[in-house]
Amino acid sequence: MDYDHPVPPLIVSIQRLSPNATLPAYATPGAAGMDLSAAIDNPVVLEPGRTALVPCGFAIALPHGFEAQIRPRSGLAAKHGVTVLNAPGTIDCDYRGEVKAILINHGSEPFTIAPGMRVAQMVVAAVEQVVWAPADTLPDTVRADGGFGHTGH
Image (cartoon, rainbow, N blue to C red; front, side):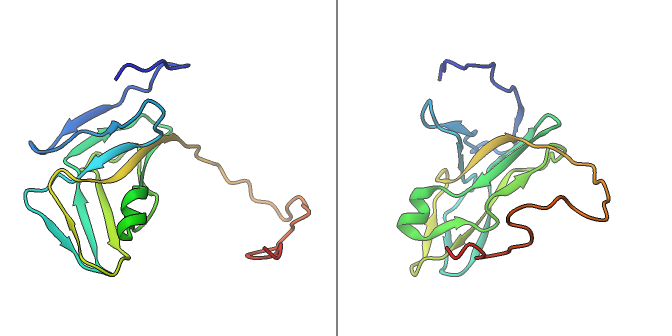
C-alpha cells in the first residue's frame, strides 16, 4: 500500500520462517496495528479456558529503542471471547526468534484457529529505558499514594 507519511516510515528487517506465513500488514491506511496470521499447517481447536501459543511464521529485527506489542483483535474478542493472554505481549528489540501470539479462549464454546487466520495484531512503538535515581523522598502530588479506586470511580 502507498501511504502519505508525515515522516518516513521505520524500516524493519523481517525474515520469513515458514513457507505458509503471511507477513504482517496494515489492513487500512489509518491502522495502528498490523494483522498477524496463524502460520500453522492444520487447524487448532482452542477449548474454553485454554491457551495456545500460535506461531506467526516470521522473525523481526527491531532497531534499538522500539518494541512490537502483540495485541488482541477486537472482532475475535467481541464475537468469540478469544484474546491475547498477556496483552500486550512485548517483542523486544534484541529478540530474533519467531513472533508468536499467546491466545486464550474466554468464551463458552471451542474456537477453531484455521491456518492463515488473522489471530492478533502487532503495533510497533518507541520505548525509553530509564536509569534509576535513588531518592530518600519523592516530590508530592495531589494524588500522593492513593491507589486503586482512590477517586471513587
